[in-house]
Image (cartoon, rainbow, N blue to C red):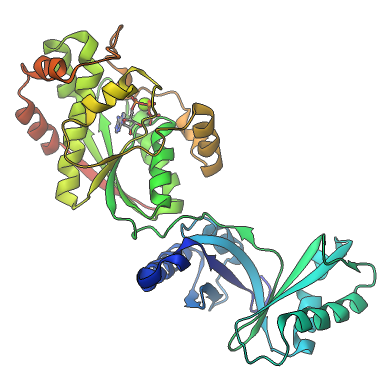
Length: 392
Ligand code: ATP
Ligand code: MG
């Protein structure tokens, strides 16, 4: 790490939020600060829609912080930058030293300047020209090209200091976690639900995970795999509470008492009831699933209607209109793919009907459920629930 190097994080949609802007900014600063804690002591503060993360001790791992900052929702771009005096000389000296390597690898460059300090004696064009001229002399092998430069040197004039940095990399976008409400996400070991969780967290939703287990039909490895998926998501969401809910008895009762074509649907309805109970206890206002229209029999339009019939909470299904390839692509991008494809049984695949109903009638499913003591089964399952924190 170079001396005084720091991170500049640009805010995304947060800046558009009008009156709520303060709340959004405060939340984002807190989220960034919490996420960087694992990388050393940083001072994190916001000025004019830019978040500054300044190392305050030798123990800081700036590379790790740079990577972590790119996974915080609400941040659109992240740059590494060095502060310097606000004179043209100081800026040029800093750029020469700090970007020497970048200049060595480029054939052309330009300087782009921004002034947050409107009292600065030069306007941004004048400043770019002055700094660009000096740098062109210092690096005679690198030509000025204002249209398609290989290297752009950014100069920002802020209140106290100027900052010099090379191009920013994209951040995770979206909204700060915690600004979009609180929801319970149904997390299985599959490809879809980690992606749906990630998508809702990106819209600022604080998540609480629920996972249903059916021992001995499902294994400890299957459960560990889900905890690992949750851990991977913490890079974006921060720490996550994961509820592990026993589901064996419910599944066995369904198999014993209900028509086979409705097994999956009735099971899905129990998942919704249990998730809703956990949501209400936690004050969460929605459920999140990884369902995608038409992907399997239980995800036809009629089946989705039958499933959500048992809950008053909105069921958020961010994958509803996505193709499997897009989902896989996202899973690869966010880093959950490799874990998701590990081959362990999920309780959904334990008692799958040979011919599941694809156009189920709500009345028929309700009737098929009548033999079950729904309340008692839900109560008993909730009594066996355990939860744990999964941390980054
Ligand atoms: P996924 O890839 O997320 O497992 P899927 O395509 O296999 O989804 P289903 O098995 O029908 O679809 O499950 C639909 C949704 O129900 C999942 O995306 C998830 O939100 C929830 N779900 C399924 N199984 C479980 C489970 N064991 N625990 C918690 N939620 C589950
Ligand atoms: Mg599944």
